[in-house]
Image (cartoon, rainbow, N blue to C red):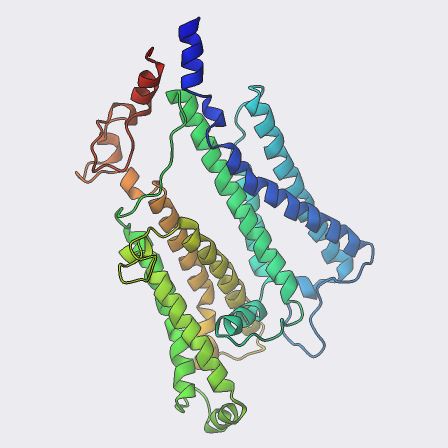
Length: 395
């Protein structure tokens, strides 16, 4: 009896070790969905605030084009589904903690998060949000254009649901591993893992496209009328439009430089010459959260330009240089999202380095985690099985 008691106190139940905190994004996603459900119901009952384009504004999002009598119930239904999904996950987590239910599949929250993200970026977000964010980052601090607040709320909701789906998937992996190995494995932030070819390609695509946009704006600021008439160039110079555009160009260049850090060493560990923080590991979320947020904003803005050109409101042959770079923004958004996810997987031990070791052997040829011998050069800790045996020895 004494040995059993010592064993139970030495190794706490795996479910209590780090999985509860993974429910926080689910709770936040539930709160956002509940708030949007209330807002959608209020709009359906005639409350003011439903998104509408400002007077004289030609560009409208699909949500603004739909009347409130149709759009508001759709908002309520989409949010209501989110409430049900999040509630289902939390109820399953509570039952699972009592040992009364099996693990719920991470597919359901992942599908809802993907559907919500596509809906938000295609139907709610347009170039107004990206322009406002660009001017703020260039220290312009303009007032928020009408209809932009709703776009911010949509992007925040998509990010919360992406985090909820990712956290639930990670929780499922931890609990399954604990059930099979007898202890919940700890995931550690790692540096120096090899970058996959797909991650490099996605990163460089996300670097080149904003540089194309920046090049046109800097040329106009320098007085070179690339793709525009001399008259339009003079008007922009007199109104200061090109100088404001050069500020956006500098923001694009800075963003491209930061994006390159997703595949370079300094994106994982700050260089030694950085004051105070030099040599410290870069927090994973410090790169992942802005990267995903920008990818959603960029995709939505680019898709709005695609809609305008497809509708014939902006003939492409006449505006190839002025609008052409923006038509590549959806590709930029997708590439940045892919590069950011690859960075997250690599830093948290879920990248290609997990599947093949430095010896070049494939994943199938690798020894199982419970039989792998530990060496200080390895980022993984000793096997979970060995740890369990050590903690169970009588003292």
